[in-house]
Image 1 (spheres, rainbow, N blue to C red):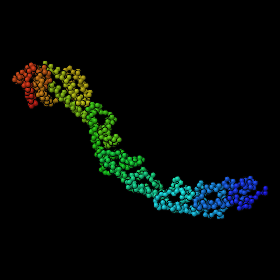
Image 2: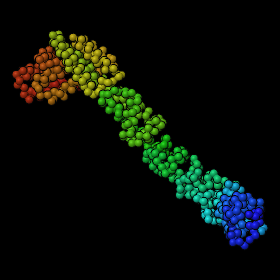
Image 3: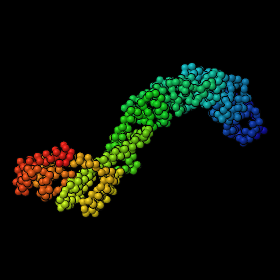
Image 4: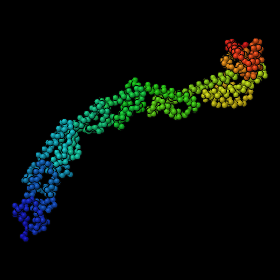
Length: 616
């Protein structure tokens, strides 16, 4: 084989295989009987030689011209990625750069530019000057229109002419600054979004105006347009803090009109009672409610002479509070009455009493336990203290009444009778009869009078007095009574007890007045009594009292003896008549007329006692 010269490849420039664009190193090796690698190394010494990306083909000058023409055609209508274009032509990027450099000013138009636009990771792009100018002009026009008309726009990715939205932003940055276009750019789904500052300001102003006018109650500033955002020209977008119709609370713009309406509603709702404030703010975000609650509390208490006060989370009408306190105090007094009637522990523990009183308020006056607890501890003085004091005062009053009632009962049923009976006994001349009646009186006092009065006092709950110490003194009285075997001993025990509970000795005048009262009681009973023996005995006792000191206590069997010792003090006619009545009683032949006669005798004697005030 002749010595191989590379120039031989171009001896036939019109050869169709050469004009086709690419020559395979394999086919060239076969033609010249050379190894393909040897052919490639020999051709690399020629400055026009370039390879395909896999270095298996040789690009002819015609093929190189075609590549340049293809790039020129694409770069006029879109930004051409050098990486993508070289891959589509099956040449590497360095080969492409070699071809372009060789044909610059020759086959390649001087209008073709290349740049990575400051974003090297995105790679190199080819484009014409006209293309870039048109892109900048079109996008700038859209941005300017959006700014002038206060509207946000979206520029679809097909408007970027082959560029990514990120690259477009790099191209637009100097243009935006030059054209004084102010706003915020963002990229979503490969589309470019632009929100002019003018639009943001307008939207925020509209939202704030809705709050200021009361159409909206609040605006969460952190989620509203332009929060904490400085505009592109350096100013700050308004947050409404300078608007007197708006209050800024915890990062929210709150309508003063809304606040005023809530204050008015709370005042109206609490005019006859109390209203919980937090539920009124249910429409507000939970994070905002505590601070607005505090704001409402201040507004509720700003009006002079206002009848509304704020207790924790409640607005309460002061007149209602006063009325509740009056009713609560009555409940406490009623509880004291119930406690007294039930004969339970008079002075319960403070904690137990507080619980009972609070439960009463919940059951009878205020159904909201939380409101009760609020008023319970905060109303000056606290409702708790007022009710406890009312309870204690009522108990003290009941106890005082109890003392007075017991002393009155004891005086009228025991002291008056025992002292008058003793005075009556002392007036007897017949010692035998006196001794007999002393035993009768002792038995009556010990077995009837004292037990009866004590039982009555217990039934009326009069024994619980702590001042008179009856719970301890009455048992001692009972024990002393059991040990006394004589009337005088029993009377000494009684008088000792009387002094301990504050009952003094009677004056002569007091004793006479009490005697008159007892005789009047006896006469009233006599007027209705139908039992002849008892009627006769009562008549004798009244007659005895009309002429002697005191009043006797006697049984029916003593009537004849009493009549005998009474005769010196009455007229013979009266004595004779009484003898006839005695015989009729004994014979059981007492007529109605006889009963009326006995009643008349007793009434006449009693009238003499009560009218004259002196003994016969």
